[in-house]
Length: 112
Image 1 (cartoon, rainbow, N blue to C red):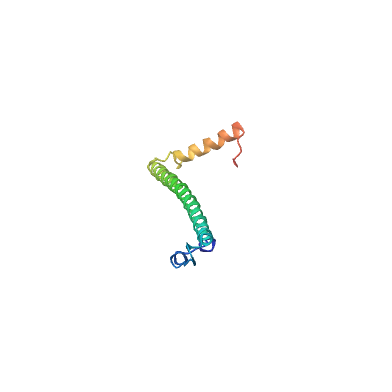
Image 2: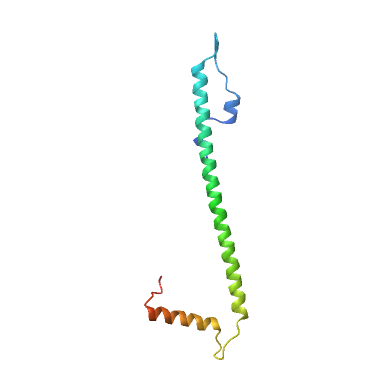
């Protein structure tokens, strides 16, 4: 996914050979190579930070969704356990009708 965004691969780093001058490696060539390594490391760290943030957000979402599932299961159990009234409806039906009536009385829109 991110392979094309980097200057170097691990093999390129491992196989890098610097030309030797009379006093050792050419400093300019070594500096340019190290600049590439530094740029890639900075990019790696940026990606890692972004992925860690995304992971934290996803974990928070998962926790919230699991809690919502627990709440919904509890509500289903409550509805199943609710006795029906004389008209064949449940108390939940009465609460829904009452909620709709309150919306009409107080002028709340159903689309909200």
